[in-house]
Each structure stands twice: as C-alpha cells, then as structure tokens.
Image: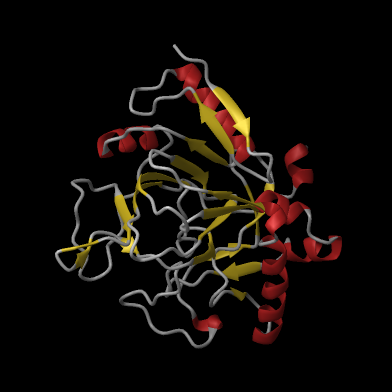
Length: 294
C-alpha cells in the first residue's frame, strides 16, 4: 500500500492528495484521511487518475447521495451512459455539442444556491484539456467572512439574500424562467448571507451569484451597493487558488464554503470534463460562534 500524503497549495485553500488511486475502493483509513484534508483545505486535487464513469460515481457516492445530472441545453448530444455524470465540454460532434458550458468565462459562483437545499460538493474529472486557458479558480468563503471589516461583518450576519435561478454561471438565460429586470422579483431561494458549515462549525459568507442577487428588505439601490462591496471583498485574489488542469486531474470541492469560476479558452481547443454532484442534506443556516462554543 502506498502512503497517502497531503500537500497544501500554500494559498488560501486547496491541497494535493498523493498516493491514492480513486479507481479502486478506498479503505476506511484512507477515506478518513481524505475527509480530514477536505475539511481543512476545502478543495482537493488528485492527479494522475484513470477513471471510468462508474468509478467516478463510486468515489463521489462515498461522500453522500448523488444528484442526478441536470438537463442539458437544447440540442446537446448526450454521450455518457450515466444518470449522475454531467459532461462539461465545448466539443461539437456531428454538429451537436456533447456537453454544456462551452468555452467562455464562467463568473464567480457557488453551484445551485437558488435551491432550498444547495449541493454539498462537486467532483470534476479531466479527460481532455486545452494547452492553455480554462483554469478553474476557487475562493475561500471562510476567510472572506473572517477578514471582513468589523462593522460590515456584524451587519451581514443579520441579512438574507435571494439567489436568482434564471441565469446560469456563464450568464445564460435558463429555459423556462422569466427575464429578470428587477432582482427583487427574481425566482429562487432565500438564504442567510453568513452560514455555518454543518461539519466544521465555521461561519462563512454564502453569496451564490452576483447577477440578480437581492438582499431581502433593503431598498434596491442599497442592496446593489452593499452586494458590490461584499463581492469585491470576497473575490480578492488573496482568497483564491487556481487549478491549472492536466489530463487525469480530479478536483473535489466543498460547495458550501467556496466559490469558483472558469477562465475562457480557445474554442478551437478541446476540453472535456466529467462531473458529479453530491446532494445537500441540510438547509443553509447561521449559528453565531458564541452559541456553538457553549
């Protein structure tokens, strides 16, 4: 058996996990090492993996119940035989895309926070990558909260935000949703702007997406101004780490305490990723640390 080692990135989050073959069942000791590293570093990278879709599913399912793959954009030619694996790709075959999200920039976001129970985590596995571009950035929402100026930190603890469901992370309009012109009327769930992680007990900013977000109860202009201030802080490069993809990389991130984004890349270059999503099992809530420590 190889020794499992965890090597921190040296940035605000993320670590490499070495000595693990995710195509094989993991013993309890190895899995506990992974869970502990994940709780500490928020994002884990496993390099040099060789995974089939069932193996990707099996590893992901150790973390919790898998969400079914969401519906693809109209005209997509589905190429996977799985109810739980989503293809993220810009590749076109026989005139039809084989996956979603194309080659453009994906802005900072946390996945599917417009749902009452947002997903807990995601795993993204690289099958083909372009020679440059397409990097994925991750931001630490624990630190984003902890480093807020004291008056702003106190204020956001009492606020709730509506999370818009009408647009995807690339800014595209979702089928079946109205075009939103007033964020106060946007469809989507309402969550506290500061939430408590159900495993670590740490508090974090919980922002979702900037577009069409609305802080409940505030005049729209005040909501927009305050959101701009908070987002400028939360997306500070000092809080982020970027994944430069290699074939065989698997990235596992905690969707509850991170945001992520993607750089654009040349559409003449192929990029194929397979993704699984682990379902959320609790509604985001805020519990002040003083009460938790009691």
